[in-house]
Image (cartoon, rainbow over all chains, first blue to last red; front, side, top):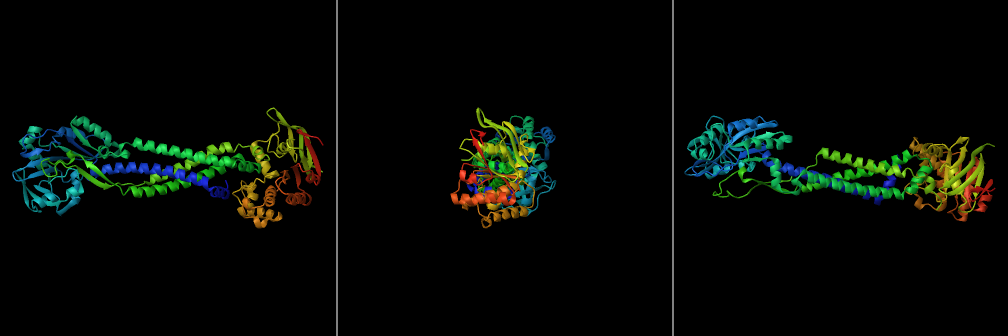
Length: 416
Length: 220
């Protein structure tokens, strides 16, 4: 293998070299970009859940309460019994878990969405701790509550005030800007789980729709091993039954409806097709180049180059072209990724994830989480594409050189 | 004088066509011999067999008492690299390489210092009186200059014998004369053995020996 010769061959046969390099660059760009795009949609679909430190949200759909009076279940979230909660908690792959209780409370002077949960648990709505704008987060067993900022503004609530919800008084410990932080499980008042459970147990409307014991819940926030999210969702569905409403990144991905988000198989198939076409173009270009150089190869062999020397030279040239194509493809992909990163995606949040009665202003409006598509190229994908390019170079060079190296110099050098 | 090349009972067939028929010949050390004959007489095929570019169907070839007939392809490649030099009618220079790189081409697979390789190539170009064209690519060289580069390439591995196939076939008469002078000089001053194929009787007449071929046979 002679680098001077290699470099000059590639430099002086610009058309063929550039065709091979740009073909491979294009193929690698398509491969990387499609994969990065597919990953970006998956990442985007995770965002609504990630904001509340969860991977799975579990609810059970129920009936509409007969009378909207006092505390009622939001019709999308009825009782999940204690024994069901315990069964779910035992499943493998769960890394964090919190049970919560979502209620609509119709008091005489106001309507309030209440969410009860353990304030010490960082999973789920516990993530709101970082979003407190005034006062402090509520504490367990102190009859405290946290007010959502727009609700607090409407009713002129400040930290230290006392609010009455469902006939019970709570001291406001702080104000939280929840709706800006998350679009899921947004409530007006956040309470300790035990206070919310007591409120539900005492409510006739709750008990009429779905019997509720003091340790039950109606919404579960689960943090799980990313590899096991789908299998966990299937296991939970078996425990909760047909009316289970289970939200995972995959279910959000379906709501997104993008071609890239539909399936990994689509990305894989498109990448493979692009790659196969690229390899064929590279192969054809290099084969054409070598056919043009049959005489030259004959000369090399006549002056004492062995088959091995010829094979080494051709493979070397092929690897250099493909490596250059791979690096160029990676650069194109980085440019494409930075441009695609400007795209904004709106992820529709299912109504039951943040239920507001339809008769209230904005109650039936679709809710979206809008974010910039988080397109990035991982170093693994970058390294893979370079290794792939080099391998394509070695394989195509190897395939082509084996035949050309067997040329008999006497056949190609006969006088014209 | 010792024989540098000995060929015994060489035959070569391509399918049913017998191109070389039972040829035996010797070339002495330091001899400038010339193969002449009409087109299709088998002289180029015989040259290919004698130089190890082609294997005979029958017969044996030895150069300096070493038989090349039973050698493997790799052994033949090594033999061509170390023992023989080639000059072709169409020069067969690599278009992407400059003159000195073309001269150094047989040395590319050899592990040696790049500077030594370049120095040796430039020295040969200077001997051919085209040292000033060392960095030029073949496309900017005249026919005579190209053939001088090709002769320098044939000499770069310090061969024992040069095989020249119609070396002046693509050149005008003046340039042909100059190239022949170089070959004769190599033969007389350096003692280089040369076997040349030509159909030009005048050129053939200026060599030590003329070997006539007709219908695949050596006739005189």
